[in-house]
Image (cartoon, rainbow, N blue to C red):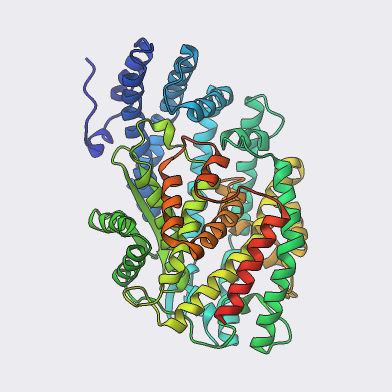
Length: 565
């Protein structure tokens, strides 16, 4: 006998597939007509959200402590025993809705997405997708286990970030070399994971009757509004507009530091020899300061963050065994976000939490949408939510009230953010161009040595004015340390496109802060129920790849850097 779906997620997470499957079978058997479609979609949404939230909670559990054997096993069991079956059952329901010919109100874009997903789906790919996720977990474990002994303590490689801001150049180099040596020790392990991942991805494309994995991934990422050729146009625009600006920034840094050449360990220290920004000592201080900033951007957004603190939806500290990076995920059945970071007391931690806060606000603002399929936000705009929040928050970093810094320190932080943002575009171009090469030339990319050579070639094209002599191995293996390449292929150009949108949001806020925030929130509230160009337009910005739009953004950023000193 079929049981009722539970209202509480932790109860549902105890269910095995034998208890979940009857609910999918019931939905598949029910008639879908003009009169019943809305209730059918709501029931499908409830079930789908419970399954997705189970997945996300188990994933979170596997990342907060990669040494927790039970958490790893629970996640692996889900991937083996529930995930493939649920994906197959979801496909049956997609096909049922598409076959009905019905188009519920507000469902135009979700239907477009569902058609693409239905066309891409292959039963034979389900075990491959599960295996891919397991290999990603292995990569997380490798990176999470990278520790070194520094000044008598065992620390993670990430925890050395604060040393890279130390005025003592010899100390910075020592820490950088120590971290690089430890990372290179895992070179062959990561090469092995890479070869396995690439083989799986090539087979996914073959099974889906597509010419290559890029074509597969383009459909999987639901990219309808631009093509690979547009990405390459963006690379060229970056090379023509941003690389010269980056050269100017690096030359200014070299002169201020008084060094003959810039080395990799010279890129994070303050060029004016001011002490490194130390915004907080405890995670509570990080949360308090960020809460005050969000309140000043918009009180309702501040209330969302307060709720996250109350409901323990934040895991912010860095510790041994924790997976690398930072992310915000959603718990759709609970209508809540969850933020994961690796904070060690540097300004980047503040920026990361503000960034992920933008993603969290997206979850809250779009939670009114009725159907799970309306929550499928294009990644290019999801990152406008996060990067746009970084820029909207930037005027409020000073501790008057709340925040973290004096006025001078706030200016320092804003300049640092603008410089890092501008310098990000060339790095993004390296990552994205590398991935286009990988999946255009998969035979060559199956040889990690050729990957090293290609990364080196692209680095020389886009990353100017820093001397890597004697560090050739460290430079050419940089692709191994960009987790998106291994874990989330092609998910990186979104950051570059979103940054261009975010700078435009910031430009608008300089003229009308309440109006810019209102437009930003209105765009977030649309979730995935609008096209990518429509989302950008609602936010008051242009979706673009061209050198002119990029040049306007660079000009504003450079002039503000000069004005702030």
